[in-house]
Image (cartoon, rainbow, N blue to C red):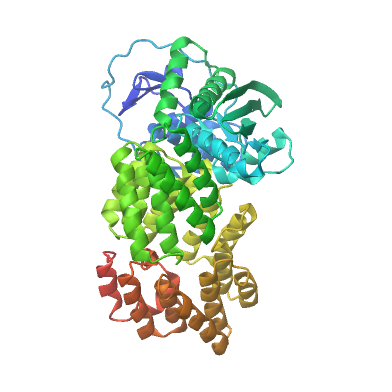
Length: 589
């Protein structure tokens, strides 16, 4: 079966589809879109508002061919990158729905003929993975700079319309791994790989970079930059510009015309909003990100120091303010600092980020986190997260939106957002962790175990809580020995003690459970009140559970955001105090 083209062009918002010309216009300019993605767009738009099954779409877009469902997900991701994350809704386990409103027939304004781009050589959308650059400096301490430059390039490229970019967690899983380019590209499901090296010495830096076509293992472009450190911004922008230009020209059939080059320059300039123009502040932010990614108490303190020095040098540095906000909240959520104090500092930093970077996705993301976990302002959080997704429909924004929907009990919407994040990047650790939580909340612990196991396999630095989550999934299945063995490997002491208290209670080992709970109270009464309430609730001590929930509320404990869907609190639902608690949290139905 083939897609039947409509008799005339049709339009929705900024977009116009011209089926006869196989062309999509965005604000009157042609967008680069593969033939499969275009066929999918026509199929969905013709059925706007209707659920279209995956089987029907596969038949429409790949007539007469047997293809894996993952190919459909890739094309959906390509369309969302251009149309927006909300344009195509995922109906879990069933299919997709086109959500945008089509304009009435004939409403499309006349548009002058545009130069036509030839169809790309492959059906998949253009894609790239930015591998961590190799640190060639004499000083190993400069590794942060090589990692940071890679991450900054990745962030810029991910904001370029029509380009699928693998997330940091997936790309950096190959750090230090000896593997040929075609193998890496196959695992990451990308057509091109950007790799390079950095040598930093004093105030000078040499960056060698190359863009490799995975199918042929041949260079599309390569360059060496030998500059002063203060010129790093020009180097980064030139790399991003060259990557986009070469991908469009060589893989998508575009032409390296002067207008096209100017268009790429404008896209790159828009993508770097929120970045500092101060080389030292930029360097400090890179160093802060390096330590934040280590995700432990001491390194997060170091990250705060670097971010604070960055914004002191450049108070207009929106991305650094957003990073600082997250660090403060992260400290409180992990009982590494008092929750109230951390929340206040996080809120102020998020406000500063928004003030200097109102068009920066990270600014809205930071405020969304504060409104959700500190203020429990669900409507405000939804507005902030929605804006962040509009500005950059990437995994980080989509996963925060999913967590918000989970906290509100809207699990179907959360599942669709998680699917989108995994469509964009199947190797994203955070996406698999969030997927595991989704399965737990839905009462499907076996599937949660699989998601957590995948996250653990992908996690290079054994991030905090992951063993606790996996152990809890075992516990909910009654696999108590496996649960205890997993939880004892948890690196975060508060969650290790919580897990032991839960599992030992389930095993009938009352003394061991009480001992672990006592240890939690002694060390984490401030900052871990919500987890202590969880332990009491699971053990059946309802009065103590409500007492500790009250303490958690006074401490503005971030854990309370999950109160509505937390399976460990199910024993409290029949108590007369439960509904008033949900009303207090603004979570009552």
